[in-house]
Length: 302
Ligand code: ATP
Ligand code: ZN
Ligand code: MG
Image (tube, rainbow, N blue to C red):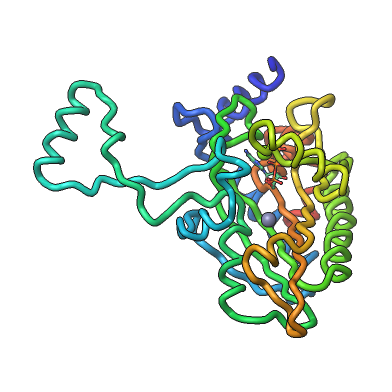
């Protein structure tokens, strides 16, 4: 815990992260952003020849899609919704009065049609489903989005609004499991090329409640999720900087994703935690990028 606080304090002192008064909500300096930009270019170089279709969604998604995704069944504790004032003049007067008195003015806000995106791939499945059947060669998509998760923390690697770069593959079982394995191998190589010590391990998502325990065990037993771990704030508790998720045909069933032969599509996604990778680099090589090892600088900036 002390380690985490001091790394966060050093990040604030160096100006790499900028305090906002909310744990897990930070501004970032130009130098911090340069690292993310350079790492994304590395991702482009590694994945570029695969011919993925690039799509960028804003960090909010259609609430109807969010509801259909089942996110509230699995992760209600992490979700974020967008609410707005929708009243008349009279309601406005009461709103200001309530704020004046230090009351809870947010209670009168109404849910809009937008929720915050919990993972970069969430808006993709219903979008692709609407296009009709996927060719037998499969579908491959390149995504990047700010994601929201309500998990305030003093750990600089656990933020509430952070960026996730993802590749999502849709196709036959063999196709998507090969895709996942390819990115596990690439992920390890990429991190090595920037001087980071990595480990891959089986993992599970933080499914909510008692029923969630079972889902987490099932996910582990079936090797559905792997994480690439790098020491960021502690050697003992490494941080997941990438994840490799195999959904079997669960999303295919849920969203009606079919292949040209009429079968249900299998899906998998690989996600890069961009802030976490930048933080891993700063933890490993120091807070000043000009002092980083030459081979690391060369890989990132040429
Ligand atoms: P963790 O187990 O640390 O909570 P996760 O399993 O929730 O991670 P995923 O849902 O697989 O992570 O998200 C994909 C990637 O996004 C992660 O591998 C990580 O690099 C990044 N990520 C997830 N949550 C956060 C967060 N709160 N702050 C910064 N990056 C995050
Ligand atoms: Zn995903
Ligand atoms: Mg998590």
